[in-house]
Image (tube, rainbow, N blue to C red; front, side, top):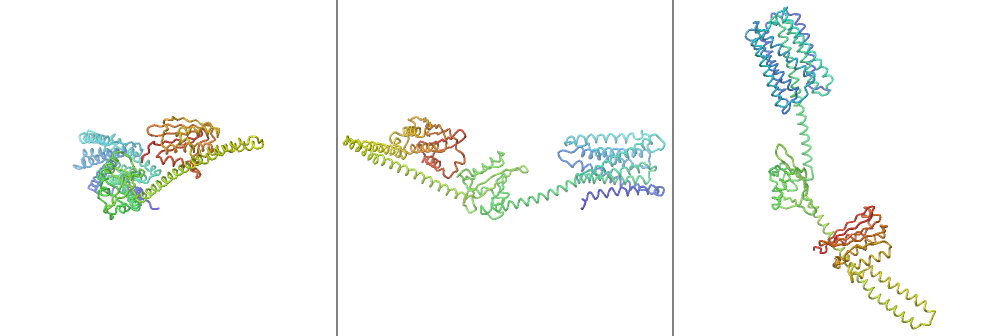
Length: 629
């Protein structure tokens, strides 16, 4: 498997350390011969490049975050800014006279300052105790305080460097302090390098491994640089140049570490994210362009900024013709003002999605084709704020065929309702006619036959054998007359025509109690039930069918019928205490009684509601006393 480029560079840097270490040993064994060289200009150039690298580390670390900075980033930035300043003063203090003991003392002090600062900064970063965030203001305060501290220390060094005992005189206590301090710096760099090496082994993320590898290399090289700088005795000794060369390598490793984490890795991630965004955009564009629904996106000025092929086809425009066009050109003139207000109001409500134009038969959203033809659409709208500007996306479809189909269905339903109403009317008229014929004609014939039988019985009074026959015939005639009346009442209750709805319901209640032995209560006011024949017949038939269902299915012992009239509506309710109607009973194909009840009520523009539970079944009906035409 091919390793990432940064990790390869980090590994090569580690191997290069050992090569430089071996080279240092070779130089150390040939110091007398190499000591004759004069590498001062080269050393000055290396130190200047190191200053530039340290300052670059500050710039990269300081600008790696925008709103909040990690304290680790702040420490790295400010710490290496201080290192850059001390290194710069280290160079400038040596410019007037490198061989002067006084200036050499200032040079040594600034050299110790940048090395101590670098050691402390790297150790703080290594122990990973800097995970909190700092705001821009707090970061700026820390920077200003650090710069003030650096300025104060630098001022003291330049002014009072001659007050400090010389650090380069052998066999003095100040020289011993210097050697101890240099040993401490070597130890700090080695400890930091060991920590970074351990973190390299346990790091999970690729960027962490790369960063820790470069930091490990920097700490190791700085330790080697410290070893070289602590062993020189002459100002022109080659070990100083070698130490500065190691300093340059360490600065370069630190720079690569910071750049890898702060710039290169985020840049690579940004590149991958950009490619992923492009891929998702291409995929989304393909989905939008192949969608069968029309999709249009407009800006806050209602200008079209995105449109798919389906939308162009719906409105009859050529591809790309609609881009930049105002949406009002796709809306009929009489709808434009209301539609614009609706869209603007929608943008202020904060609702993510709203359906438009699907309220029953009211298709309020209408599109306008290029040729001027209007067509109904069903649409959903969503709102999105991007870069401070609000955009609206509408997904819609042409529902012309659906609207025509619905209009046809409504027409067929209305025709079926009219046919059902006509059939009910014809049926009632036929039943009324048959009931009248049975009562008036056949009833009168049976009554006349009974009268003739009575006359015949009186004319043969002394025939004992004929008396039982006369009595049997009279009984049969009475039963026939009673049956005839019951059949006529079932066909058309005479009380409904003669006494009105109230007396017809009283007769129905009395007959129901007697025939089925089920308690039936009627609660009604006679004055509220003076209605026209059509409404009275409907109410009577619905109650009659309900009582029939109670007998057949409810297994009830009690039925309550309540009727009232208020605000131009007749309300009545039939409640039983039976087993209750189940939902599946409504879907039975044999439930013609329920269908007939519903059609009767619907024909009068009324409402019928049927509910059932373990306490029984309830049928509630409301019928206007004067239906609208």
